[in-house]
Length: 310
Picture 1: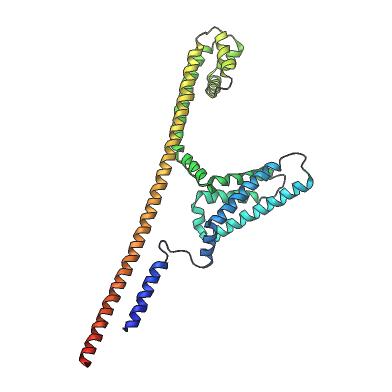
Picture 2: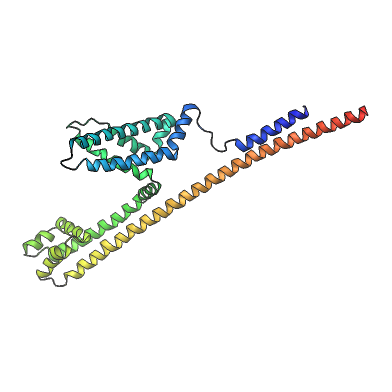
């Protein structure tokens, strides 16, 4: 190997190390270009702006006595937005192929856009009314909203357990209320606590604190149960305040777990990038050391040749 060839190869290795892409192997051709487009901040910000604007226009379109030209403009903008969303879906399908359907958010977008494409016939008017679901795309376009929704889905099993506890409390309270107040001769109290189902419905109303004092508790107290407020306040404390705090604690815990998982994922991604950089640097070092060794051998040969000639 010539000395000049060694310098050229050394420059090529250093240049490749400074400009080469580290990380997963990207898609090739047009799929790679579309992937870069749909993942770019400009594209995502444009989609977000269209979702917000479309949400506003959908609300304005419900106003009565709109001028004809305004309603026509709103309809034209709605068609434009549907077209953009449809193009976005096709771009993602082409770039990601079957990987598109591995994300629940992508499936939601696919459903929302599909509903928007349903013709506006009278028979399908219910489906057409679902076009407002396009506004819900903000839930995953905006990162903070997406984290909250994902945390809520993560908390669903725990919420099921809390609802089971609440159901037990309502059942036990219904049995007690029916036993205590179900035998009243007062028709209003009889309607509230005459049987188990009526008592359960009434206690659910008390739990929501919707007119619980005048429509429920006061009627029972006027019927000859002056200390009924003790039972109802105890039920409100257990069913409303305690269970509500359990829901809040569960959601907060789910949010913290989601943030921890996201931070851990980011750390793993950073560690992978560091490992890839180290592998690249090790490969470069081995190549450079090899080139230096070859250059040293060439220099030794040149020196020996010059000494023999001298």
